[in-house]
Length: 102
Image (cartoon, rainbow, N blue to C red):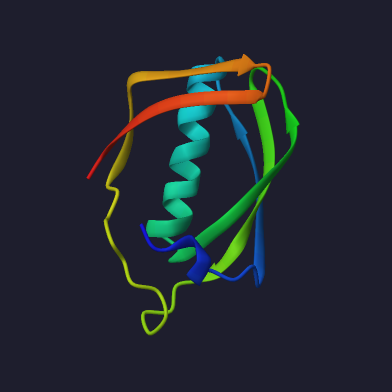
């Protein structure tokens, strides 16, 4: 949505997400991140996920409120969809797939 290097990590937002399975949890997590960006105008630079199970995820998003003088918005994401969504554990960590409406 904007250049990540323009976002400083001045504030933290912590939250816990629930889902019925990994894919539902993945989409609910992405929707919460999208709400922080679109609803609260909070730009995210990095997310720490210290707790993850098949149905619960706790995390902290690091970033700052949007400043139109410093943050040029390149695109707007309107929604995260379940279409072709998936998540799997790999040797390198977790990998997820999702499609958004712009």
